[in-house]
Image 1 (tube, protein in one colour):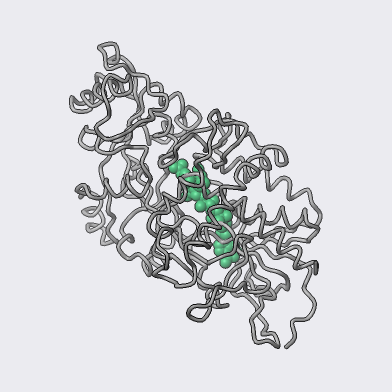
Image 2 (tube, rainbow, N blue to C red; image 1 turned 30 degrees about the horizontal axis):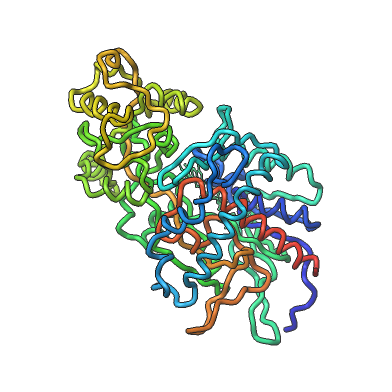
Length: 494
Ligand code: FAD
Ligand code: SIN
């Protein structure tokens, strides 16, 4: 069958930040967009994002920041450094470096776009683990960054008559044709809505997110060792199989991010889905304690901090409770997150919610156990510069306790945290412009699948072994916009 004329609609599958960014760019390029979203409301995991979006250099940063690329490469670790990749011989270091260069190189413009064109406040900048500069942007108000960006972008999209959003619409299959040359091209989707099955023709952008919430499906398949951990992600099935069915190359599927700090809610300690203790709490000055003692540089990468926690003995309560109920066991640790008054103030926009939910409690220093008080005294001396940190922490956020008698009457915020599955680094291999790449013969380079793009957490290869906090919202904007523009050009026959 010959390919025929390109259809003019751009079908975006998934209404998180990657899908919204792609939709916006496709509309700006002159296309008409139909966004299909499985849930009742758009937003996905993007709307939950709490620390912010990376960008460097930007007008909101104080420092001259030229290290975003090198920090990202370092964080990606062995997966990027290896010349040949274990999961595919085709997606190698140059391809991975090109993705990192695109992400970091376009990051300043992505912040400008959100601030100047979409009208989002991103004026507050924090430093998260694994970053050598503060570069994670959020607003000064109470609305968390994910919700602020998603809401503003949706508002803009809804003003465009060429944008149509269908919620409660789940894509089940990609439609394809085989060209005379024998290659496969994607021509549309099959989806269900209100119990009916329908098809839609058009260029397709896949932005369906990751599988950290697919505990008994893709997570168990690729990382069975992690199925006992709680998650920040709501339970939902991964969609990677739909891409694989049309020949997409999936890479790094076993690369799953464990975030070190999910809140253990005292009123529901065994909940499988937990609120995230945002990394900016540590960036703002928070410390981690096990039995009252610090045990890790809190500003290291998530991979490192989680690894150190998970080498400690887990708490046994959850497993016991699960056994009693006959349910699946849950593995958790008993780690305390503690913020002094300075760190609490720096995170004021978030703290009110955490206190209200009972995830954090306020206590006077004198009410804490002796081991914790001693750790506070020692750490305060480190922050004051009177002695080096044995654990290597060099940035202390807004911590201001002095380690003196006067501290005893001051209030800290304290809560229990545990490692949780948070993000999946693996997914569909893409080009720097978001084109989905097809499996190919041994030794050959990966070629784009005609008519199909992807962006956001569904894609793989960019973050390697560890994603830096704040880089997921960024990848949604950078690669979402690239995919939207490219798909529109294709759909409009340019
Ligand atoms: P999502 O936002 O998850 O959207 C995917 C959408 O696709 C969903 O709405 C889903 O319903 C839909 N969908 C799935 N399958 C189908 C189908 N078959 N048909 C139709 N629709 C479908 N990252 C940062 O950079 N900074 C942060 O501060 C930050 N904080 C976070 C806090 C939390 C609690 C969590 C969970 C994540 C956080 N992240 C953060 C990560 C980041 O939010 C996500 O990785 C990112 O937003 C994913 O965006 P996405 O558009 O790829 O997917
Ligand atoms: C967090 O706030 O700790 C999450 C940030 C992220 O996942 O990028």
